[in-house]
Image (cartoon, rainbow, N blue to C red; front, side, top):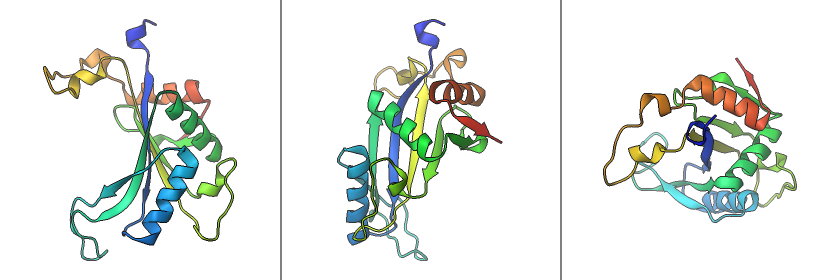
Length: 169
């Protein structure tokens, strides 16, 4: 396999959705900082939902984006917490995958803190081949050629081989 055909993990985004601003959001930020070692960024609501008491532009969660070796190591740890299993429906048609972790205390080295409570988190990973950037750059934007795109089947095989994970139907 040539270098340009090799599938890579581009980034992993770790997200905690709290649903409201205030103390719970600060605690969620603390959890993300403990787990990833990076400073989280707050996420804002895109729409208003009166049933949940959410207004557009309100801060309702936080996330951390990891790239390179950090992303690979974190995804390995997250799979270990999930007992190296992921559902087939967790993959999108481009091979990207996402899954949830029920409790942050399942990660190695994390202990339950009664002040913080229990928080779950979502892990979203983007994979692709080199040259994927041409669809996202500002100047001379182009479509990624069909033979350079990653399919769901290739994404599943990549995860099985790279992380030693069992994909369950």
